[in-house]
Length: 355
Image 1: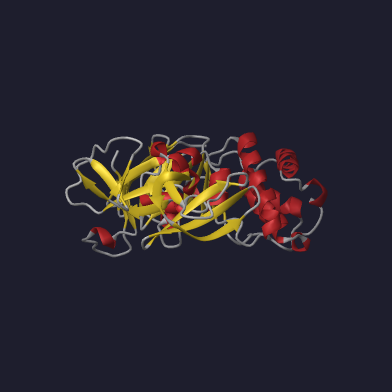
Image 2: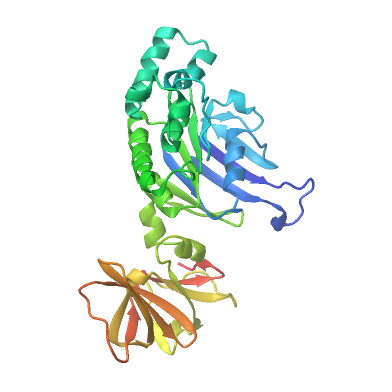
C-alpha cells in the first residue's frame, strides 16, 4: 500500500500545448493517504481516466510528479508500480476455474503453492466465492466474473493501490448495490488504498471516504460526501451532486446586499472574495427551500410524489426552482411563496463560492 502524492501534475495529448484549454488534465496537487478509499467522480470526458492512467503509469504526465510514499514513480512503468486494476468489463480466463483465476497473479510471481492455497481461500471467503472455486469461470454471471477480477487485485500482498475503472457498468442494476456494499466491506477488511472511477454519484458517495469531483479536466473539489453536499465550492459540484441538484439562480449585489427576484437574500456568511464584475449566482439545495408567506412569489409547475418526500418545481419569472418537501408538510394551493434557508445559501462568482 502507498501514500500517493500528485505534485503539480497536468497533462496534454498535444505535443506542444500552449493554452490552458490544451490540457486534458489541468494542474493538480493532492495527497491521497495510505489505505484511503477515493472516488474520481465526473461526467465523460472530464479527465478521470487520464488521471487514473497517470497514477497507474500508462501515461507519463506532461508536467509534474507522481510519488508513491516518497518514491518518485513518474517515469516508472506500470509493471514496477505494483498496481491492481479492475476494468469495466471483467477480465477473466474463461477456461480456468475460479480458483486458478485467483491464483494466477501469485503463481505468475512464483509464490509457494502453500501460500497460494491459503491466500486464494482467504480472498474467496471475502468475495463469497467459496462454493465456486472449482467451477469454470465461463459459467459465472457478470457480477461473479467481476468478483474474480476484484479478487485478482486483492490476492497479492505487494499491491500499492487497487484501481476500479467504472467496475459496475455491466452489472445488472439489482446486483449493483450488493457489489457496492461488498467493495466497501472489502476496503474495511483489507485496508488497501483504493481509487474508484465513476460518473455515478451514488457509487462514488457510498464507496469513498473522499470524493474527487472533476469537471472539464480540472479537480473542482475534494471532500467527504457530507462536504460536497453541505458546502459545494463550485456550482458544478452543487449541480452534479444531489438529486435533484442545487438550485443555481442569477443574482445581483448592491452595497453588500444580495438580491433575487426583488427580495434581499440572506447568506450563510458574508462574501470575502472581490467580485470585480464577475458573473454572480446564488446556490441553495432543494432541501433548504421552504414555503413561507413572507417569501418570494412563485408559481407551482408540478409536484412529483416520491413517497417519503415530494419534489416541487416552481417558476419565479423565467427561473425554475426545485424544493424537496417532506410528505407531511402542506403545499400552498394559492399564491405560494418560498424562502431559502440562510444557513445553506451561498454566493458564487464565476462558478466559485465567494466565502
